[in-house]
Length: 293
Ligand SMILES: C[S@@+](CC[C@H](N)C(=O)[O-])C[C@H]1O[C@@H](n2cnc3c(N)ncnc32)[C@H](O)[C@@H]1O
Image 1 (cartoon, rainbow, N blue to C red):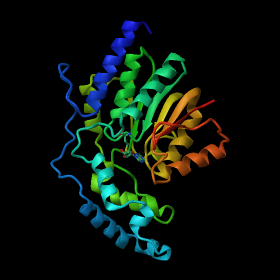
Image 2 (spheres, rainbow, N blue to C red; image 1 turned 60 degrees about the vertical axis):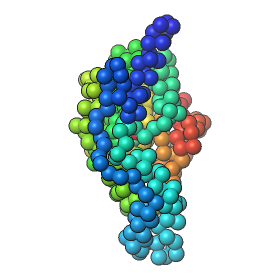
Image 3 (cartoon, rainbow, N blue to C red; image 1 turned 135 degrees about the horizontal axis):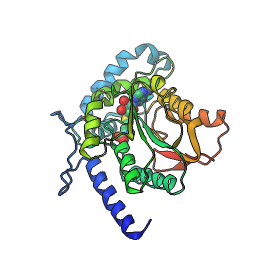
Image 4 (cartoon, rainbow, N blue to C red; image 1 turned 180 degrees about the vertical axis):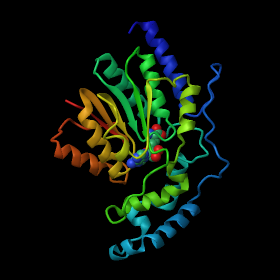
């Protein structure tokens, strides 16, 4: 890419990143859709109350283990409050991803465009859509004219895991009630794309549970897939449905590999089953990616 085009691409992506980070971007006039609600921050006391409720709710599963909900979830109230406030609905952010995670998305997007790896981009688990907005912006910034960006989410929040098969995730699901189960709204996500001038025919929405939407989604090939559905099942369904459609040279990013949920188990099982030994590259303490050989 010639130098001036490169500089222009970097400036454009920096502006989009300020936008999805919740900033009003002047003088361009971009302001994020208003996701805020007048709710106070979540405190450690709120979290203690939620953990106590989880002790009662999951008593039948906890009793034989002789453990508390906090022990099974691997969290204590102050740390839980920090984590939940990061995703608190008061925030104007359109993504929970930090700069390191966003740099990774841009770098891999650019890599597959430059290398002409065929296929679309997808994120499974988009919340307010920020990463998919950045993916669509990266197509423009790096001169791609053909790929689509698929935006897959229930737009009804996280599904409820079965405590009989994964007690830890079921407890976390209860705890995530403090942030409305990360429920987002399709109309608001569309509006957030539109405000950035990026809502066009190349942005394709897949609203619904992954198990219902992904297996038959009309996606032929993918070059970049980013999985951010938190749970074992959400990760496994996405891998089963989408990895076979990832082009060689394409990338799969797994945001939640380092979370105390079943995501890493889903990835490790899938990789073992399909004898995938491409090295897992760490993005930060939580996310990993690999390149399909
Ligand atoms: C951690 S948030 C995603 C964060 C987002 N990628 C970002 O950049 O901030 C997880 C999202 O996954 C969605 N989700 C999780 N499991 C799902 C499933 N099985 N089907 C549909 N949506 C799911 C939730 O609705 C939620 O919006």
